[in-house]
Image (cartoon, rainbow, N blue to C red; front, side, top):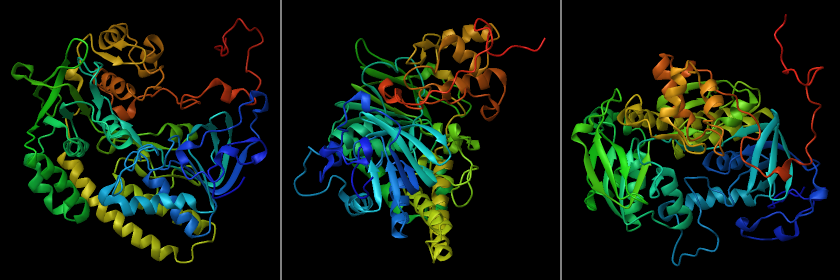
Length: 524
């Protein structure tokens, strides 16, 4: 394979002809169309294999190549940047400046690393399995293959944590992350009059972005009582003045636009015939109880809901990395050393895909990983000094993060929003009432509920419903979420075409002597 190019996984390691000297990386689609030529012979060998071309992955790649390492970066998006630095399509043009305004210089520096001759960049490529702790199984376009590294970094980012409520499946109801993607990736606002509701600092980022894009934000509805917590947290927030200024800028944008901010309240329903027409909000206590008797209605044609982010730990589960549970950092997260290494040797995790911390922490953690891998390979002579400087920055930034976490600590759960008719699993259309019926039959574990109702078996593979299912089981059983027996993660961890698997070696099935008997039998 050639380094410093955007590559397809083409026959014999040759560069796909459509990729030659194409400056627009979003146009990289794989030219090999003949299914008969599919095979798993395409293997890229590097020092550091990175999943994710977001802030953490790009920062790690930059640090690694600065020390002479060979790096591969795999990402399922057509353009690099992740969610925070999401780029619009290459066909979009803006006269007189960058899409990223104040972030333009930093974004350009981050993206420039992909042009380095020691980097192999695979956009539009899905990592669907990790068959060994040093190997990523990838599928891109019409080909599949392997990326093998002496060290592996999982920087998979995060996804929205959905909270079901009546009407949340109506057209016009969109997640906070989805609204940001529309704005950043397509320059589209989701409506004319918008309510932004949920819990967490992302609400204010999204609301300010919508205001700047010209939308009318009717209200920001925040579940946490943030106003009375600000004074106590203020000294810790001064540890990261740059981030504090940015946070204040978001808030000032809303003040100037006259956007009301309602705290200690939550959305309890979205209403409308064929699409959302209004949002009902009501007070919510920290124990999750909702006072519907004093609900209010706000007219809107779009409802943006965000209840925080959840790290994408599916691949870490698959590898066998130890996970812990921290609600304030998104739920399940990677257990790591101070050098970002997981419990599996030479497998690292960084950024929001390891634990929710924001873009600044993601950048610092990524650099720490790149430095650590270089040091282990004997390429970083000044590793201790550089590591100490990065750790100092990370500690100061994390102090700010802890303050924000304390300010926005929300209700313990949102089960009070559910009615019997509320859809919990959108893919399989499983309602809360159906789950309650199975629980009444003593089928009350997560695995039992999944197998009997198909909740979590749809295209999203549980990303949109497992957190709610866990809350339901935890509340009913009294077992903390960290103590629940979660369903196993199995490959493919992302939806891929069946053609991507046609060439994969299939091991002999583990069948009993009598194929009519179950595979596992109780000893008699």
